[in-house]
Length: 471
Ligand code: UD1
Ligand code: CA
Image 1 (cartoon, rainbow, N blue to C red):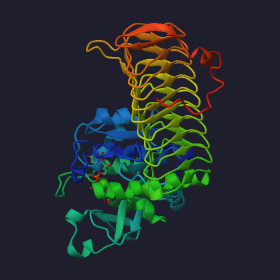
Image 2: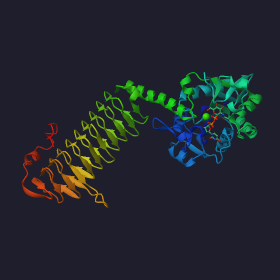
Image 3: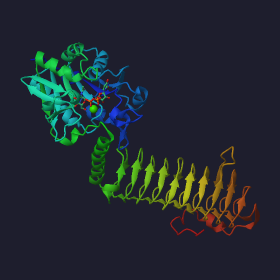
């Protein structure tokens, strides 16, 4: 019997150094994302409850890119040459000084493995008092995976490439998750030979070595969904679909209505408040957060966008935008980075807004481009109002005051300021600042007389709920 360590004696290694040839990709396999999260991070998340410290990740192929996505509590270990899974674990062991304990090894390409399963694997390993325990499953289609034969304390794994006809018919497969006695695996790795078709050091051979010395056992996976390992892009899609459904289920159980789960894509990082309704064809990605009582979609595509309570976003795209509570976006609006919509603001059909603050209750209802601007509260931009923010060299700012009104087809040649309560006639081309409370029109627009909109200025904010003046 082997002395097993206490829980704090568990060390974990995620193998993420390989290329993933079967992905046919220029990107390392473990960098491919599932619902917005790189594959390698799923393995790390699954390990963390069990091994909060001493979590190592073997990186190799595109090591810098892989390191860049790792969380702070995962320590990268560089495998300079990808000489096989056995070599990868050997490299990781160089970073571990302790001589006693349990080494949990997790292939980085099993994004559905749960913390529960890892816990059970370690439990099984401890209670059996063996040198090595490997997670296995009986799959209807075992192709591509190592086949497992267990006999009297010895577990033998043969890779498909090296398997005989009879071995290929075995349906019991190696899922690439192992618990090892630390001293045993150290010793066994020193004895590995690359006498296989790949000329690699196979970690799986260590199981047989350990088995012969001090027994090895298998542990059978209970939930076969977790056996969705990713070796090619068809596997990737299958695994992502399961994760996507899980994310949706979680939101629905938390009080979000999802009208059509089949066409709704919500990444793992997204937050949504209760009583929000998500309509079909919607993509919520990155650091997007949605408040409660919102109506999102159909066909909303929001990336890194924050949406306040009670907002409405239909048929629109948001990128790094902030949408205030009760605001109304779309249909067919494009909110680019730096867009901040105030409470009950409106950006309507065929409008593009960039790096612009639209104040509370202000409206950009139709066919506008507004870039690098600051719009006060209760302003109304007529259809086709355009900020000419770029003179070919510089990006210039436009400031539009509280309660200001622009007629249809207004061109605002930045830098320019439209004063509070100013009123611009249709077709104005504004090249100079318009003082507050003045009416201007023409090309270029000249000040003519007092603005009829002066009244509006004194009631700014109060009439935010009223229907907009049509442009
Ligand atoms: C491995 C197992 C196989 C098992 C399968 C489960 C071996 C020899 N075979 O095969 O029995 O059924 O996993 O998925 O272990 N890696 C490195 N450095 C390397 C090589 C690989 O870090 O030098 C990493 C990879 O990035 C990957 C993991 O190890 O995350 C497994 O490597 P992979 O090439 O996918 O192994 P398989 O051929 O799938
Ligand atoms: Ca694999």
